[in-house]
Image 1: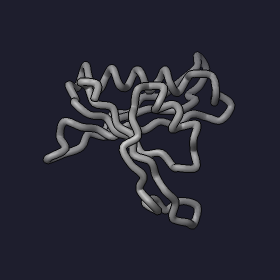
Image 2: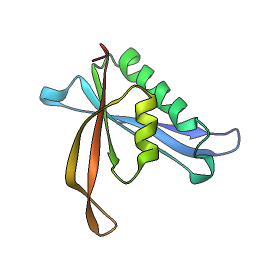
Image 3: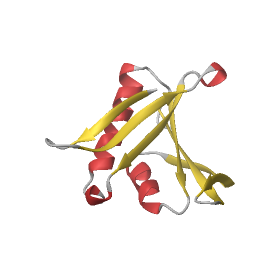
Image 4: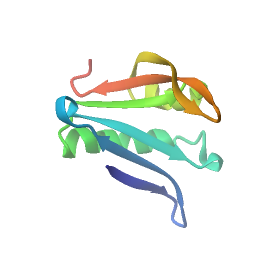
Amino acid sequence: MTNFAIATADEAIGGVGLRLLEGLFRNSAEVGYWLGEPYWGKGIATAALAAIVDFGFGELDLVRLQALVFARNPASAHVLEKSGFKLEGRMVKGVFKDGENIDALLYALVRDGR
């Protein structure tokens, strides 16, 4: 796992990272990110995601990056879409959150652009 803080000059305001996958999936990683609510809607998450994509494809020579988002979080899905990630599928009731099973959306970005 590789994690980086998203920070202002004064404090950490979020994080972004990669979890390298193994075995048959060894050329892939799962991307994750979060940002404190006061910083939403300012392009910060999109910039952080672009940086981790560059790191994953450039420094780590990965072929595929993927991310799961809660279906009820369209803002996070929009960050992925602005960064070139494509929706690959819906995991119906695939996540247990806040006492209920909810849908998750699987997004991916492949280095050759497919």
